[in-house]
Length: 293
Image 1 (cartoon, rainbow, N blue to C red):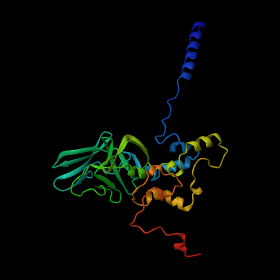
Image 2: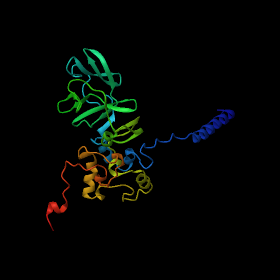
Image 3: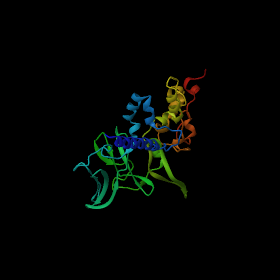
Image 4: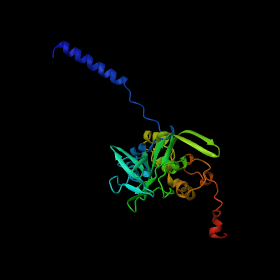
């Protein structure tokens, strides 16, 4: 290589070096719940084994984007047909990477909707949602694991397929960790909600049970020698009733909410989030259970 070529090569290398410093990485997308949330993947840096186990848990898998990998059940004939009365049926169809539930009457297509979201870990069952006009709707067929077969979605009519059941935010409150509203308003006596499509934190993630973790991740990353967990709720720090309330938010049956489930923070009393159920007996006090002291 002659002197001129060396100069040209050196100049080009300098230009590349300078330009590479001007190019910045695209900023990471902020968690849709706000800057105080870090996202579950941020936990893996210090808790890799726990995080790996979490990825296999029912909590993590209680909601996922629908795909051939996440939707249970056969799409092959004859196991992909559910029959109603009067010549009506719903057929499970796969076209390339897309999945559909298609309704037919006397073999004439009447309605066809895609699988957008799979709800349920699949240990017992799965049900499915589709998106239309800023709302999510439940598809007529769910998958029932014990019988390894498609089944009518819970509460749906046994005589015909139904595609018009709107899914409210209360469902997402126990099957996701966050959802973005487009609009919430009253229409007469009914609450009307619309959502931003696919703006969902799928599954029940670490921060639903431990609280927002951005400050914790920032502090512990800067102070790896600090073994006392800072700016995070540890389950061991909660009293027994607080632990019960934490699980009871989603695992104590259907109740009328006072506040959105997404606003719940570990340690909050569950009674602040649901109206009392007049059909249930009042909670027994410790004195009721153990007698007078």
